[in-house]
Image (tube, rainbow, N blue to C red; front, side, top):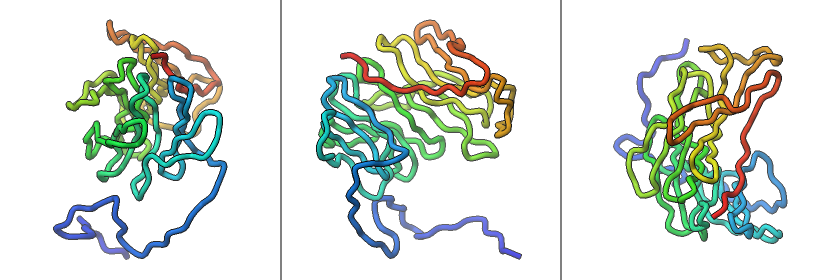
Length: 241
């Protein structure tokens, strides 16, 4: 029989630093020209690609060449996206111990934290056309770790954020936010099958996911694309300046 612990602290009295090694480590180099499970984005001027690989973020010319490291280290940095004005790159990082939205200058300098959640973690940030605001998915969980999501908007200059959508429950997912080029509409995918529980064995001939549209002016929420037998996902594209 295993003992039960009510709490566990690795370093009593010390704040855990994600960026530091906390045990035996080995350093080695990897030379590769391919990767899997990568996120990438193309700059609005069409000159550069930014992508993540193994928790680090790189950029390279769209015509090809050697990748340049923008953000590396122990922290897990993923999901980079260029701002429409080309000045910034947003990304998700656990640098402070939890997944939050960060931004940095296009050359990787001046990294700063936009959101400061410690429990409802954030990911999948997308830019508003003015490059002053980001919309991200806030993560909620019930009895399963994958959980559900809500769309929240944040200013890159600070603040607590503004809630845009409300989750149906803590199990049926919503995510992958994208914004129309004029900034009026927010699009995201959501599990619209009968709830309230997530199921792996749902009927593939019925409607599971839909692409939803939120009118940012009127607040009207509609199912833009809803088809049986199809699992829909959103793909980002560069926005015009």
